[in-house]
View 1 (tube, helix red, strand yellow):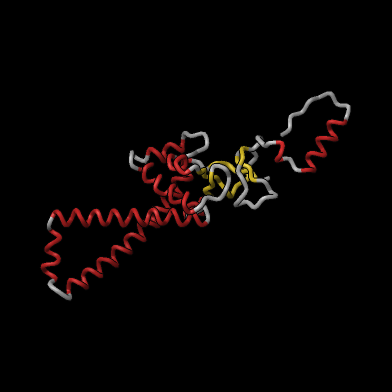
View 2 (cartoon, helix red, strand yellow):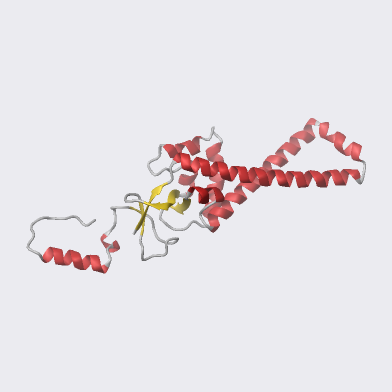
Length: 209
């Protein structure tokens, strides 16, 4: 049975920073394309009148809101797509992290979308929702709690942490705390061993791991 640890705050922060750099690059590329299109359109008509309008505070405010909206759309689309498709953004891949539902199942695009929107909520009060993961027992940020997800270090097996049964597909297998398996999780071979152990004249008691 494979066992994994939760992703810590610093590792997650580095992964998030990498993802944000990618998002910013995409955002600026789209802004450059939009600017070129505007300039081309302005040249084909009354260019001076068109650009003079940008000195109007009302129009500047509108442009700012449009840019903020564009960035937000790219941000949500980015995290929704990668988390919904594989549970890993490029940043998380580089840092060996993966997002799972709290019950161990692969997250859907709906959950990924909810988590992406929740991360905006986490960032509003000085990124307090992100910092929360540093002190939470399961390393959950606010958006993890909102979406019911956890982040694990997928590329490192350990002795204590989240466990994924070997006989089930890794992506669909429920994650459980290591050492807290139910009697139904014990394979037939293990049950036979326990039965043989009970038949031996040994007075010592032993807990089922």
